[in-house]
Image (cartoon, rainbow over all chains, first blue to last red; front, side):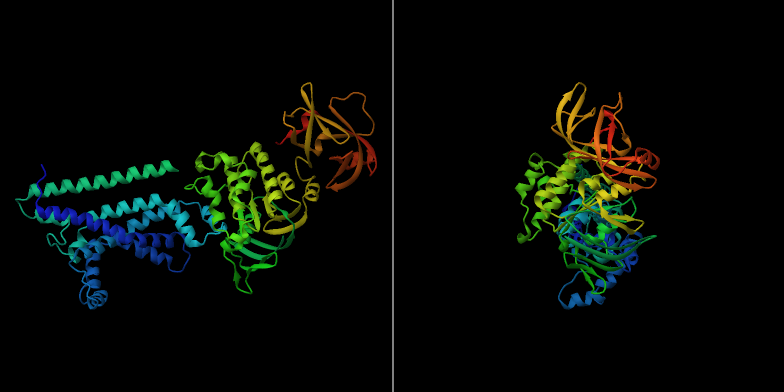
Length: 227
Length: 351
């Protein structure tokens, strides 16, 4: 039987909220960067590629620490935000930013694979038929890379659910405020009497991941059948 | 239509240098694969940029390196029918057809949707998805989509290469009918001499990234008679007359032609190689060839070590070829009377 406390329910709700928000916030940027890296022809493209992929190889704790330096009260961006009355550190929004940063390379990579699979002549055909580049992006490139976008979104969501290292540094581990499922499990794991509670959250975690991956498979099959 | 191209373009190890002025409504660009034809198409449509030079269509400058002009592809009004159909797989036939039409300025819309669907016989396909179309249907839709964008110029870049022989000759009448009825000037790009002759009057010959000749499609076919393993191909559009036992009789010139590959259709297109025509000075007593035509020589031309002989019988015209020695022995000259013997099996039906 699942043994869940009210803070566990908060953690589950927060995990889903953070993952969904991270996915939504990073999607437009993910599309933009994937477009630039696939179709762009500019100086510094390799450098951009390295920067976009950097979070994939860096330890999440490093990303968290850098974000803390950037967004903290005395940070370069944090001081500006502070002046505007916006506080991010140790709020659920910081968890969103941390998850978005860590999952970003996965999102861009998936969308890019989708975009790269489009026949260049389809794009050329659309241009010669009178479509501007942004019209082509909306009416040809995005619909044809939809499977890549969906895959990227699922990966991003799943990665956000599991995000720990960066989140604990910039958002802390405040039950009911910034405590997501992995952080709650971490708390239970360090207490010898909470094995059941930890296991219950593990089960919930597995269930959510299975639902996400299953939905992705179903959606992808539907998309393939439409072609 | 007046097209002027004077450009240079380097692509890896390949360089294209073209300086040509083309005038006409049905222009062919002929050349082998890798000669630079498709690069020329890309430069004209604005999909590629020349290293330097100028491109203008009907006096409108589309590209000029000296004046820093480079009109965007969507503003050039030059549509392309590609070798592969390039239809949008996420849209149905109707949405594909209307893609360019919706983006075309209302004052340019001279071709409307209904009449195009009628001309290209697309009515039954409109609601279908692209994956449910045959190769020939796809290419017809691609042609329709390009035309509905109401371009000032249509570029057909090897539109028939991806199709098999039967389909190819089924599509050609559509291409011709549409261009005649809708009066859209086009460039027909092909490595096939027969297709070029069927589709174009004026031809620009491209080879090794350069324009090597500018001629008529008929002159091009005659000049290449010696080089081609099939000689000069006579393209005969014939009307069926009657069934003659197991052969078919078609009206030609003052008489008729007996053909074994005929069909029940009223009209058919046949190919006949100049190599398959035997010329005799006198009427042979008995001959296995089913066609023995009395013809007058209207002209002769040289192609390598061969002589092309243009024969006339009434309105009918045929080109035969003989080696120089045979031409001397037969004493062929304009006005000579000759008998042309052709086997009934020498004709190849092409639709």
